Image 1 (tube, rainbow, N blue to C red):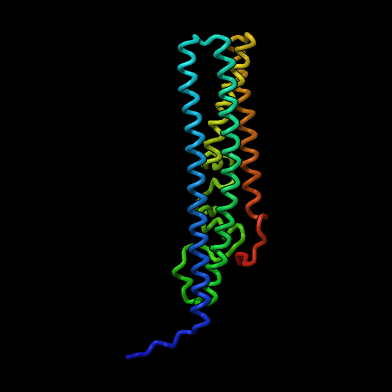
Image 2: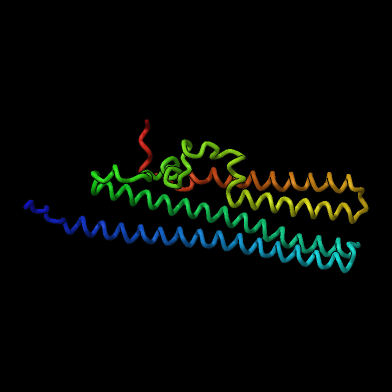
Amino acid sequence: MTELPPRDPVVSEKLQILATEHWSLIAARALTYQESLGRVSMFLGVLSGAVIALALIGQVDHFSTTFIAVAIFMLAVVFFVGVATIRRLQMLNLDDYTWVVGMNRLRHAYLELHPELEPYFITSQYDDLAGNLKTLGLAPSSAPLLGTVFHSFITLPGMLGVIVASIGAAIVGLAAGGFGGSPTIILLAGILGFVAVLTVATYTGRRSYRRYGPSIQPRFPTPKG
């Protein structure tokens, strides 16, 4: 019977420390996801409550000038909550990227201790932008729309950006109607408001995405080629 080689206590201690830190980062990512979903749920709850309240007020007030004033105020509050939610989601995405950087570095340490295990890892051991995107499942080969305008609309901040832009369009349209604008003017004002808000949301989202790579100096970059 072949005897197993004796275990190095120093290596075992290093693995234990690395594994403990790895589980801490996994817990941090889980909390990040929970807060993201909680923020989105809170915003949708505020939006639903405002729409129901406006529907009841409209039935009583018959959509008079008073209704327009109340609607603009309530939708402005919802708009603020939506903008704050998008900004917080962008910050949480940066936090999640940081946790992935840490996990990739730990994976690199695992493979330094046991390089023979490399064929069993499907995530990256490199902490630069390319390696981190591979761990996130967002490598260009698997996500060809990554970094494009189309990709931004399938993320949580992008989807909420469309909803917030719709709220902004409603506010602008109500304001135009309150000043006695014609249906055509109201429609054009709403379209302009929607495009303006969506453009700003898309620009801030892409600028936040560009901060991922330079946000942390890589220690173990992906080898060229």
